[in-house]
Image (cartoon, rainbow, N blue to C red):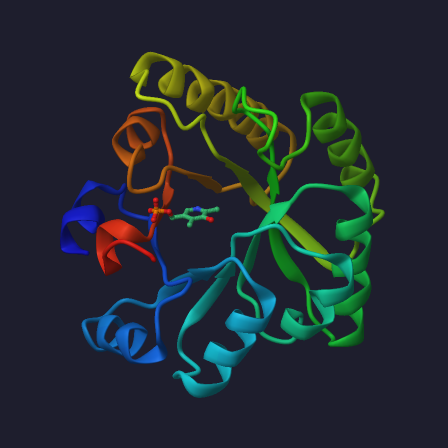
Length: 211
Ligand SMILES: *Cc1c(COP(=O)(O)O)cnc(C)c1O
C-alpha cells in the first residue's frame, strides 16, 4: 500500500478495493493504517461495515441500484458511481431521511467499450446543471470518476483520462468543493496519476487476484 500512497498527491486518497475479500484481510490492512476501502456490491458493503471498525471510510464504487441506496445511506463516505439522475434523486431522498448530506462523484463514461457504465457527456452536463440549480440539497458533488478502456494501448488510456481531467478542471471553476478525481486501478493507475487523478482505486494490486 505504501507504494501507491507515495505516488499520490498529498491530499490524495488510496481506496483499497476489497470486493470479494474477507473481513479478516480488510482488518489486516486497517491495522496497517489503511482507512479507505471500496466495494461494488451493496450487500457485501453492508455486511463488512457491520463487522469492521467504525473508523473505516467506505466507498461505493460499483453500479448502484436505486432500491438499494437505503442500505448504505446511513454510513457510506463517498459514492463514486452516480451514473443517472434517478439514482441521484434517490441518494438525495435517503440522505434527507438520515439527516445527512452524502458526498458523491459523477461517473462519466470515458471508455470506448459499450459495456461500461457512466454518464455520457451530454447527460453529465444536464445533471450538473440540475445539481447547480439546487435540485439535490442533501447531496454534495465532490468530483468525477471514470474508468478507462481495458486495453494495452496506453496512449488511448491516457487520452481517456485526460478527457475526464478536462471536465474536472472545468467543473472546479464552476463549483466549490470539487476536489476528487477518481480514476485508475491496478492496471492503469500510473496513467491516471500522470493525468491528474487524486483518488486511485486499487484491488488486486493490494489484495491479490480475485477468483
Ligand atoms: C474492481 C474495481 C476496481 C479495482 O480493480 P483492480 O484491477 O483489482 O485494481 C476499481 N474500480 C472499480 C469500479 C472496480 O469495480
